[in-house]
Image (cartoon, rainbow, N blue to C red; front, top):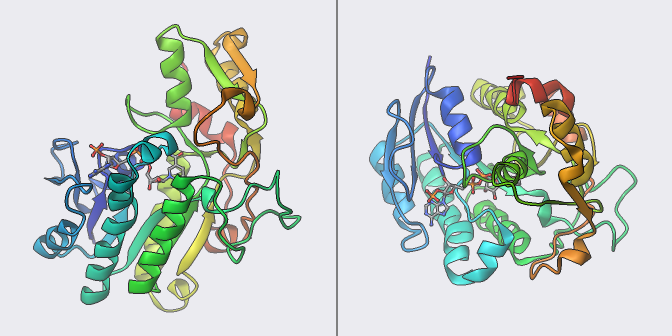
Length: 308
Ligand SMILES: NC(=O)c1ccc[n+]([C@@H]2O[C@H](COP(=O)([O-])OP(=O)(O)OC[C@H]3O[C@@H](n4cnc5c(N)ncnc54)[C@H](OP(=O)(O)O)[C@@H]3O)[C@@H](O)[C@H]2O)c1
């Protein structure tokens, strides 16, 4: 039986992929600032930076069975440019969503980020990577906004699931926050393609992510034993811990693109105002226990980018 699922940020990379995966089997609704992403779902236009509290009214009007919160200012540089608006979207909107879910007793899955953890290049991480119990010590304001989002959600709804996602990649539209989409956008513009050699993450394909969310939803709604361990933060990522450069080389080889276009550099060379953590190793044991598999990049390259 289909569920009524509300996806915030349904025009974004993650939200649009979830909508695409679920529109045939569930009754979908969602929101963002842009017009409707697809006809098969109800879409509400809202600027959360103007009025984060409106989320509560939007949800009350539709009363979904489950809320999946993906909307965010997802790029650190953008967030830092206007911190007041950025925090309304990334922190305050989540508070109102969690409040509504508590009042109506509905499950909430909210997207957080691995950037809530400290930079393991600077502080000692456990041998297997950061566990969900590690203290949050974000390197930049975006990571701070995600840690604050988690706190705001947990205060309202301790049972919420907080997905601390690593770097995501896969088929996307321009403007969406896919790492591979960004690389291929540079190629399409015939622009240089700078890639960090010293920034490593558990690269995760959007297709694998939607499969994981499907399984998570199934367990959550089955209730009882299956759902009981499902609350609080869960690290989310793929099996391999790769540098952005190594991932880009794998993608370029898959697509037959000239690797000579890649310009490998250190993060320090880019002189970013909001420098990212270089090392974010994650302990993915909890994810593996909950969902059973850790996807690998090569398993998803052909699905995300089929050969021409
Ligand atoms: N992509 C990654 O690699 C990655 C990694 C770790 C965590 N995450 C987290 O995963 C979630 C999904 O990310 P994503 O990759 O899908 O990001 P994205 O492609 O940038 O999409 C963000 C979504 O939020 C909406 N949004 C942004 N500002 C808004 C506002 N003021 N009012 C209403 N809606 C607004 C956007 O729509 P409009 O612009 O149309 O408003 C869009 O639908 C985010 O919480 C992100 O922080 C992503």
